[in-house]
Length: 219
Ligand SMILES: [Zn+2]
Ligand SMILES: [Zn+2]
Image (cartoon, rainbow, N blue to C red; front, side, top):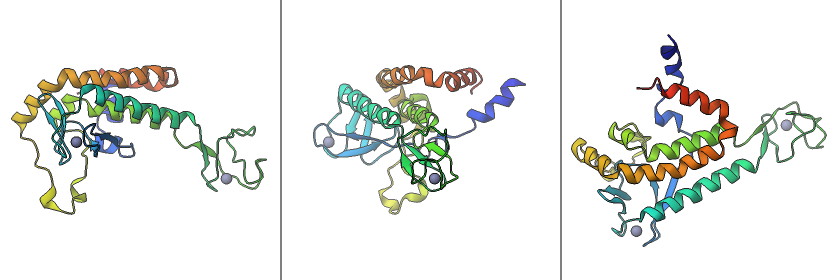
């Protein structure tokens, strides 16, 4: 059946796997200027999601929703300009260029005339990567993923050198309450990402279509 065939492509991939190569969303506290990796509603020693939003644990100050949205927007713009910079890299000799060769995807080589190397040029930051990066940012504010504890972990378990510093996981009751209290706020942050997903939409018509279609079969 269609649903059974389509599902494995998308929903059996965990966020840890799918977003493995995504850049982390680093937030900066507006009060003390310390920065931290934001991973959604999950345990961290650097920040805490409270009933009224995100709190910096260095100075105990809340980050205003506007500050969060502004940083999210800044990060998104940075990713999108990196994508539009359009760097190409040769899969053989590793030469990097922004020059699209008149010889198609063939490596332009040192001469710039497409000889001397048989490599193929690929975009350093591909459509797929940008799309994935946007989905990653959206997932960070997905409270239902937080509730199911399926968000990409901030630090993989084996990466904790000092077990004593490992943040204490939230208990389910606490987590459920935080999810409901932050649902609207986090949804408003997701809308910032939605805007960029829509803006770049025409580039993802096909890919977006597939994902949208598949989301019908999710769960
Ligand atoms: Zn702070
Ligand atoms: Zn080359």
